[in-house]
Image (cartoon, rainbow over all chains, first blue to last red; front, side):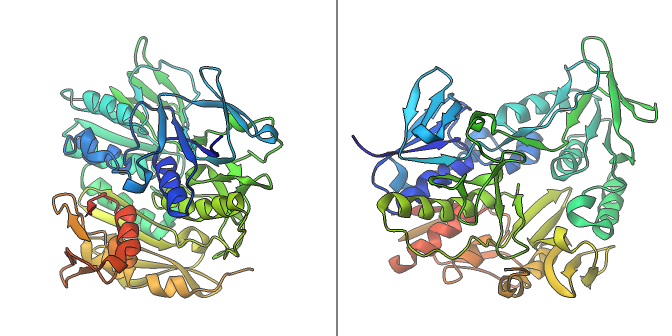
Length: 402
Length: 62
C-alpha cells in the first residue's frame, strides 16, 4: 500500500504543508482534510477588502503549486479524533484514515463572548462566510456598530466600517489602548488618535457584561453599566485552538499543540504541527514555546515541518538547524499601515522612536537588554520601507538564550 | 521561467524583495519592480517570493 501523509486542516497551513511535503521529496500520497467547503483562501482581506466589497471571493483563492496537483482534498470534512499510537485519525463521517505521517494544521476558531443576551446580530470574522454575513449587515442603512476587542481584527473592522459609512462605530476593550499588547503604549496612543480622528469611537478600560435585545442584539452592556446602542456587534476577542480532536494522546494541549524545536508533536517524529495551532520555541529568541498568529507563520512552519517529517519517513534524519523564523506582521487600517519585523512584544519595556514622530510616519524600536529585538512602522509606504531596512540587522541577532 | 505580478493586487509590501532580491526590487518611491523572465536557477527564490506575498499577486507561469 502507498505510504500516506494526512494533513489535518485545509486552510493556508494545510496547503503550504502539502506543497512543502512535495518540495521536500515526498512521493507518497498526501490527503488534506478541511472542514470548510472551499479550497484554501487568503484570510487577511476578509476584514478589509472583502468587507469593503472591493474583493470577490475568487480573488482570495490560493493557487496551489503544480507539484501538489495530485494531493487529495477532502473538503467539508473534519478530523474528529486521533489515535497517534495506532497512526489513525477518524473523520466526522466515522471513517478511519491511517497514516504514515500526520501534519496538525487545524488552526484556530474565534473565541466567543459568553455573557448573557441574544446571539443574532453578533459576528466574528474568520471565514469567507463570516465576512459576507457581516458585510450584509454593515451595508444596511444607518447601522450602529460595536466592535468588542481592539486587536488586529477589531481595529481593521472598525476602519472598514467607517469606509462603509456606518452611522457610528465604537470599539470596546478592557485594556486602555488599542493593540497595546503587541505594540505597547507609544504606538497604542498613536493608533487611538488616528482612529478617533477618522471617526471611530472608543470605550476603553471596560469589558462587556452582556447584550440587550430580544430576538437580536440592540445594545451592548458595558461592565460599568453603560449601554451602547448596537445594530451590529463584532466580537474580535481572540481565538481558541482547534485541538480537541487530539485529546487522549497524552499531549500538551494547554494552548495549541506543544511542539519541539523541529515542530514535532509529543516526541513522535511522524507527527508535526504547522500554522497558528503550533506552540513552538523560536530559537531566535528565548526558547519559550509560543503560538504565533501572524500570516507568515503557516508558510514558515510548513517549510520546516515538512522537511523534518519527510526526513524521518525517508530514514534520512538529516541535521536540521533549529526553527528560528523572523516574525513579521502587518495591518492596514484606514489609509495607514503597521509593518513589523522581529518580536516587538518581547521588548515592550524599552520602546524608542527610531525615526520620524508619532504625529506622522514613525518607526519604533523595541529592545531587550539594550539590543533591538523588533521594529514597527506606522504610517505610509515610506515608513514601512524604513522598517524593512532593519530587517537584516534583526536577522543577524544571535539567540537571546540558547 | 516566466513571472507575472498582478499589479492591481500588489500593495508594495516588499516581502518578495526579501525572498528573491535578484528578481524583485523597490524603486525609490517604494513601488515594485521585477524581472519577468528570470533564470530558472532562481526558481526556489521566486517560489518563496510567491508564497510570502500577502496579496498572493505573484504567478509563476512555466
